[in-house]
Length: 73
Image (cartoon, rainbow, N blue to C red; front, side, top):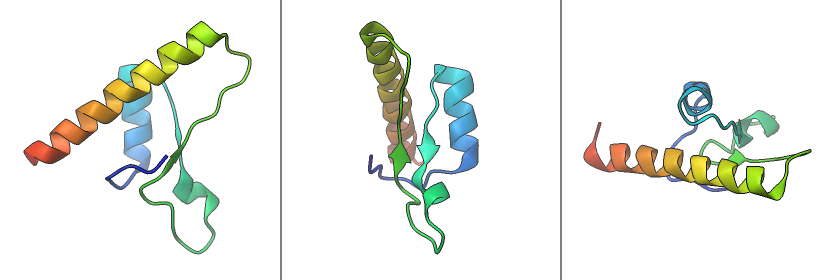
């Protein structure tokens, strides 16, 4: 998923602690740089209801992050 901000390790930790959902920065998959503003989501062994909840939580994180970036904070 392309996002309009650079994804840092601290963002992953914050999202996991605050929203109880985790993603992987795509930069982890580039050997020569790249993927700085992309995330990867994956799921296994989850029910459809759990996937919906996780996507809702990720959306709350992204909305919060975008609102913060727009406000300049």
